[in-house]
Image (cartoon, rainbow, N blue to C red; front, side, top):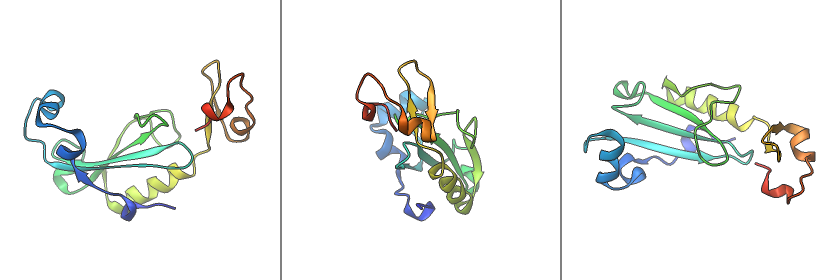
Length: 133
């Protein structure tokens, strides 16, 4: 399983883009820090950040968010209903393993989330591979 050592951290400026984009999102041109994003085969992913604006960043600790198949934060997992801050690299690794162990999920035509065996067996009018994450 992937862990903290597998993350590829980049400068937040490089990750977000231009200084104008940073100013629009933070109101400041000064936004030092690093960020890594990793996707997992089950359709989930993780965003790990350390900056002066993240929970614990000023103390050298990390903040994470669980990502869905669209690389957007999701608050609908058993792991957390929010971002988690003040984490050591070991704690980030533990959460990464938990995310990788989450069941594969599918979004049914009616918008319902299906997990595990139910997700794998889902038969949609559309190509099921378009729905499985």
